[in-house]
Length: 266
Image (cartoon, one colour):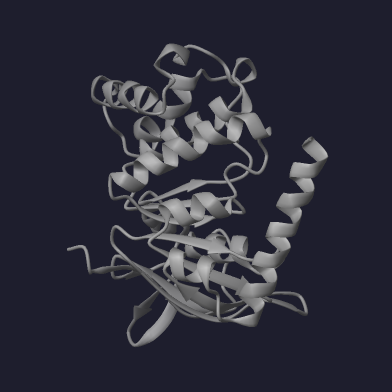
């Protein structure tokens, strides 16, 4: 059901030593929703995604995906930690694409995509390979099936990384600045793949500094600052007439940086 909540974040906090990176964050994401997360560097955006995938253990609060808590569970009326095996099982339903591609250099593009279905999902190769080839075609890289990562551009490697995540048939995709490590001319090819996933109805949380992309793709945008969600709303409202002072200041700084970059290029 499109109005069903897929991801629920309740009272999520995260400390690294004395630094509180997330402060009692509450968030709900509907199935099929595309949520963009924006805000200044150090505002907690990446940590939020990492806690949702339980790559970071929250200091307080919890995350629920498809009705199941992530990282902890209730047993005999108590909250207890999940085993590594239980956490790994939940993670199979979460696709994660981060700044670095982290492809295995000794495997071809096709083999990188096949690894999860074969080793984790225990899918027979005769079933997994057509899926992997279809995903390579989906991201526009069918002709690179036998290429090793060192022979691929950054944009091509990131597209393989997206296909690798999709091969696990996730319910949820997390994108953390997926284009920030790319040369400017390669950004568009990766954003186009994410746009296609959005059109197909994939539930996505997208941390991005690409404001136009966020406006085009997202159903809703949240603005983070100092570990808290300070603003949220539909893209056209939030970008065209932001009411929160912190959102106004952040968007003004983004426009100034873009203007400086344009003048430098000229």
